[in-house]
Length: 243
Image (cartoon, rainbow, N blue to C red; front, top):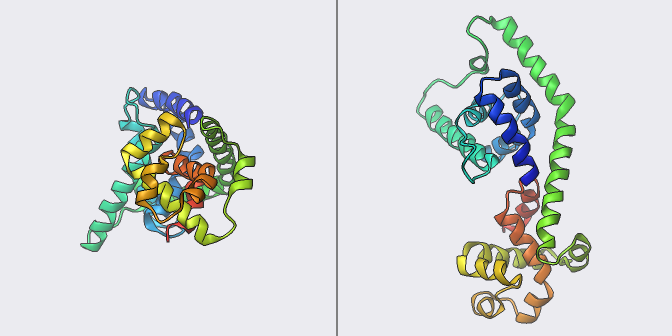
């Protein structure tokens, strides 16, 4: 997600220089990302009033402060790790009876309950106005990056439409092959180097014929690209194949 990384890195630089307006803009802009990571970690749909969302917002804010712009890891990978870790800490604390992190902890100390309600309503209205727009924009950007990555393997979306298995069990089998390639460094390195599947090794490792592997080559590679990439929206496509 190169373009997204460049865009947010410019904003993070402003945040770390003390520009609070830049911080607010980034939090609002990437609310879809924050909600998505929170929902995945909680394994359920989340709402504004959930304390987990408050924890995730604080974690995203922490990530903005702590991210090292010189590191190779994408900010989104770093932020997702911070959010997940803070949510896990929160789950452990609440199980032990520690007080929940309230929404008001995101606000100034001098704000009363009425101000908290007003501010929360303002945030909710912001989500309603921008959530679909920003989600669609991030999805388009992600698909654009995904298309570029596929072209490195000589694959386009038309190929995927033509080569995608018709039956769910065939899609699950293809996903299992893709996951194996993603997990085994020698398989993945071979794929990156040759742009081809390591057919000889796969024949010995999976219960799929060589003929089927060859026929599903583009589809399997496309799944590997999703698994190994930072494609937050496209990852949802894989959920039904994990068995």
